[in-house]
Image 1 (cartoon, protein in one colour):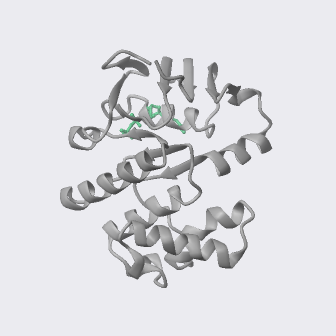
Image 2: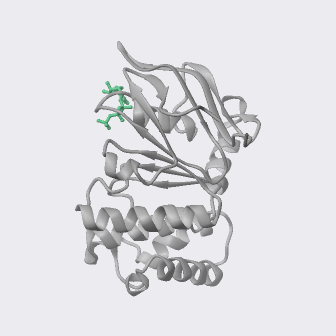
Length: 226
Ligand SMILES: Nc1ncnc2c1ncn2[C@@H]1O[C@H](COP(=O)(O)OP(=O)(O)OP(=O)(O)O)[C@@H](O)[C@H]1O
């Protein structure tokens, strides 16, 4: 049995009268790709946000590498997110005023890298994801599929331990969606990053090792939990 890297127990989160999470459970090991599935409004994104320390649960706990997220200071939690976590969302995540190279270099700059080294690393990741030709372009001048590859490069450039992906192919057609999923999971697996993948599409979830279904804020594991 592999030791989990990130775990959530008995998570509860309400928004006014809405119960978004109700006793939700989750665990992921290093290098594992887990799909969180379920109908619209079932609590998938809220679970991802709690796991990433973006949303604070009303009750329950999230533990990363043995440390409880809610007992950390805001600064320590932000620092953890910047250094250990990467994020890919459906769209609107690239900074339109920056070139693709600058977008990918941004998380490195925030971690204290110097411009030249950060740009070189960004170029390396853009090449790796097959979008080296976008380096000097702004996001408005590239296609949706290219933009999503740039976003994956930006999420992985810091070599995070956990990659959070919320409907990462939601805005793409099936061919481009499959290309992005292949690149995302291959890159994550080769660096042993765990991937928390929110999707409502079975063909996207097919890229995972294991599925967790969320219904009315409750989680159900499709296979034995770690
Ligand atoms: N910031 C918020 N304020 C109020 N209600 C919220 C907020 N975030 C989520 N909710 C509600 O909590 C419930 C769960 O939402 P969540 O976004 O986690 O579901 P989801 O499964 O990711 O849905 P979808 O697949 O449509 O994105 C929904 O009823 C939603 O309306």
